Length: 89
Image 1 (cartoon, one colour):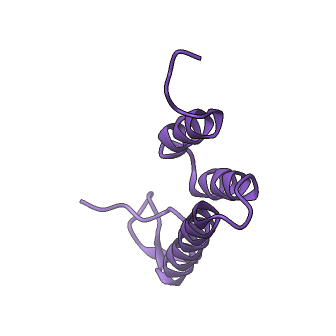
Image 2 (cartoon, one colour):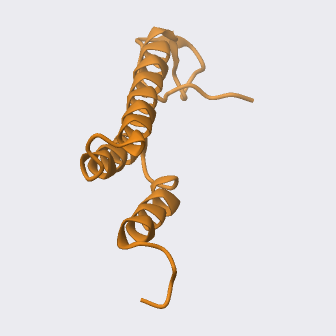
């Protein structure tokens, strides 16, 4: 390798750069996979905490969406709650 980084650092950097563009569940999975490769290391704790925080935020967002009334696109009237069905002006 012509890079001064270790193999771990190259892989970690690659995964972390691309994880940002992935859906939350996949990003959390990638963080947990990296954490599994760093047992007993501070990196393991940080990656696991990041995955936990992402999953918790995703759950809270889903719960909030489920609590909002859905608006029918056809007539603008409230209907049964459906995820991602709200339209904002």
